[in-house]
Image (tube, rainbow over the protein chains, first blue to last red):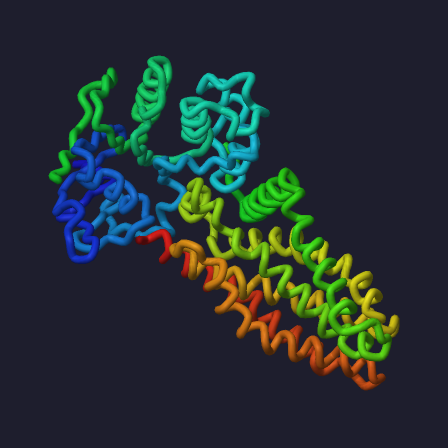
Length: 209
Length: 228
């Protein structure tokens, strides 16, 4: 008899307080490898805060987070989680290629990919050496998405990945997510817009404002 | 798949900050010009008597260099916090203290090193005897990294506050007092032909302590600043 593997990430009555006011929660959910979860909620319902808590930027106020069945410890899962927030983490004075090289230096790279290929995959071929501050908002977003393509990670935490993107860009995010999930990864995506995801019905995590 | 090694990560952070500094070369020149102008003011204010200038030369150059470094300190983490690079650095599977150590090293290379390079010129403008010049350079080589390290901790502590520049100066300058006392003590001893190794050794000991502890404190302070 085989035991089912524990969920990649599990939250039990997770909540976060700001000056004793709950920002979200208590929240319970499980995320298995190969699953995509959509975090839904209105403005101010705490979607971004939830992602920052999961990424480890904010502390857990109440409740518990488990990573592969064990209480989550940051030093163990640091290389397995990628966070893409509203601030894209790109240096305006550097080119997309240089920005990706830094990410590669810090995180390592997936097999069979390099900064140039990752940029080509997100449709930034020809813009590799342009300073990021001269790119449009959508192109900056694409440059940040290229990081997902480049660095190895199990769990993607994407905060509004569709913002600023054109129709091809939205399709690109969906394609990236489908590829990641098919390869056994998991992703948590916040969005208040409608998302058309073709790789099966995503789980939904509803935030209450 | 290529693993991220510690060496490669350190090199990436160092190279990034040096490249960024190079793209904004004008900013590197600011502290240098500031130190040059302040040093020129001394003879105007005190009169061009060689004996008097010689007596104050060491201290004046030291204080001028420390103040010039203060100018550039404020921005050490600001742009990284604003564009989210700091979050990415915190989340990277690398020891944050070491990565910040690399950032501090890059900051020292781009602000303190140019100042050390022009320090002999500043000192000779104030008639510092050539015999005391090596001691001045040694004192600066030990005092400026101290200031970068202490400054980085304070910048990290004030990272969340707006208009932290003045607050930073008020917090950092008292901490500079022992650094200035030992560095100036060594210079004064060298000018009088006395042994100067003891104060330099104290500076070195303090620097060794700061090298180990400051990046750790800096990492803790930045984690707290982001967790808000």
